Image 1 (cartoon, helix red, strand yellow):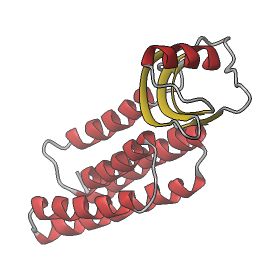
Image 2 (cartoon, rainbow, N blue to C red):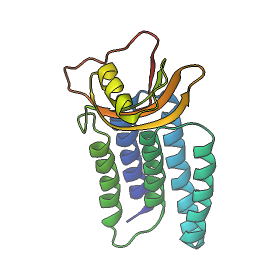
Image 3 (cartoon, rainbow, N blue to C red):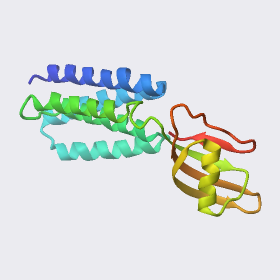
Image 4 (cartoon, rainbow, N blue to C red):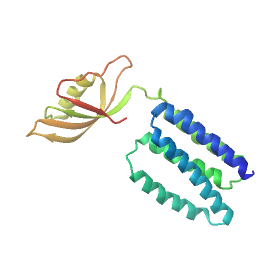
Length: 197
């Protein structure tokens, strides 16, 4: 398949990924430029490596180092990491020659479809993960779960205590829970909740 057609397929795939999936769901403008830049950059370098006959393993190793540096430079949610690697993968697929010719578009479509399904708002819609700072020190896990269920108005599936401060009477805990669509999240005075998902 001619490189120009592969480039067009890559541009279509990254456009769907960024403008139809990522931005409408997450609304983070700064990562739009990042995903587009990473994809086009990887596409160009992969094509150049493929054209000069340099082995793909060397190129993949270089991209691995670059992606580690990029991911360590800012805090990304797990969904954003998935989109980041999808942008990398689309660029690599578009820039490298893959046999048979139909395989590249199919793999690109599979990547976009995986993120469409995996990051769909209706998939596990009631599940949340939050970091909760309580204004009481609770060392007993069963009592902590009961307190959190009353506070959140939800069913707690897992708690991970990060810190119990007996001097200042505070508890910091990561909680994974599920609430019904019609159940509001109830907040008590003196307790702060920060969403991480």
